[in-house]
Image 1 (cartoon, rainbow, N blue to C red):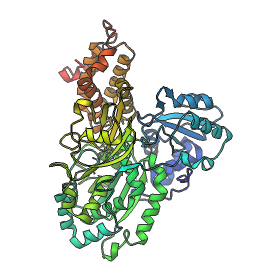
Image 2 (image 1 turned 180 degrees about the vertical axis):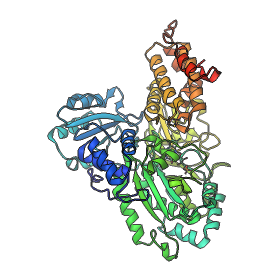
Image 3 (image 1 turned 90 degrees about the horizontal axis):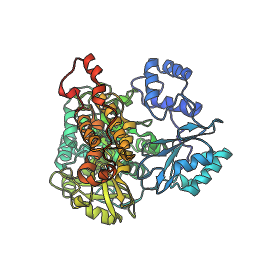
Length: 594
Ligand SMILES: Cc1cc2nc3c(=O)[nH]c(=O)nc-3n(C[C@H](O)[C@H](O)[C@H](O)COP(=O)(O)O)c2cc1C
Ligand code: SF4
């Protein structure tokens, strides 16, 4: 892999109905060239693309990978994930590098050579600790490797001259199953769909029981049907490759080794719903995959699997473009993703209407996860019965799991739905697990009492992340890490999430510092309930889950910190809101924090 790849490899791609390239791509080029996006450049970009200045400015400010102030020539961002992050045992690798290079965390060195900061999980949890350097994943970090990194940075060595193995992201598939082990032939799914016809193919996908693999588990056949039925001249297929949930990297592996299957799933979807355009929304952290994905698309066009008259079928025209994100977890939420595709900030839309009727540019749009689309392609070839023969009553087929943390063999494991957590932990060599976070920070935290539970939508649901925590972990640290993640990634649109996630993080911080009381715990419960109930989108609605799980399943963890009894809160938050209540003429219970 060429670590410098991606910088010059961005031809003008998707833009909503005009020339000049997609705003995110144009801004990325500016950021690479100037190492920041100054006001002059914002004017130029707005002018060139015919967009309002305010729109370009708001996008620059929204996405973490853009900066108004100059970043270093080497821009290093450490992952903060508990699995692949910079805190490794007793060692904080971020601090180690900061000391070696003489720069404070979050700062750019005075000579402009290097910036060091943090970012959310970069999807390398099976080969961390990891960081991004100029947007490229740097894996397997330890004190020794960081010493070498520091030397190369000081010497001004180009990334292309750094040792290849530092960037050599591996797949680590330890247990292939229904999807990964079944032989694949390019074009087979499209041929099957053309032979069957769109109605029969839709019926097959529906009969298979396939449910979305991105987290929510919505029936794929039903989603395609709603879109197909929508009254419109044009329909759109979107593959959600934003994979930002900490601890998840299974889509990375599919995009690396099975991109054809995913593209073919998109093409089958296009045939079923009647779409001519498809998009892959690729997370910015996976930009290094862009050259290979672009090549695969070109090869598929050459082979008649994309473009006009696919496989010689007159009228079946479909092509796919790739849009690369810029470091915003919220853009994985499907309506925020569509906003981002439309060159805006990734703020989730008010729903209904749903994307299936009003999606990209107001057109009926199917948004599916990478794995869902790959499974759809496999079903098209092998049939609904083949798929439904595995799994449980409500969860058919198999699931790819990204397993990381304290286990002997982190990586990808594919299981039929219904497998027990105990079995999974045995297989990956996690004999000393005190807890497992299932489905990322927004999911479920379980302990040994729940290890006989089954992986399925009707029991333990997961988008694919499974983080194992051994006995050495203080689970309060884990939950504080998740709370910081949600504060960082809240898009700020609605108050319950914007303010509530900060209040929860602060409460955990106070408890962690030994100043918490039972009052704080009860306050935290109340705020958590409010954030869950009142937030606008799934991020806020799930952000308190880890805290509530910790309180319910591991009550002793927080009790230890409450040993300093007697301490009373010095700040009455409810009283401080009195003025706001008066201004908004509110006196109802919801306007109070107690
Ligand atoms: C905060 C948030 C982040 C999300 N991130 C992703 C993601 O990275 N990938 C994904 O496929 N779905 C993600 N989703 C779910 C999507 O909104 C959507 O349900 C999914 O892409 C639909 O595809 P599926 O039906 O194939 O699962 C996220 C949802 C929320 C609320
Ligand atoms: S819940 Fe959070 S992420 Fe979702 S819209 Fe509100 S502020 Fe944004």
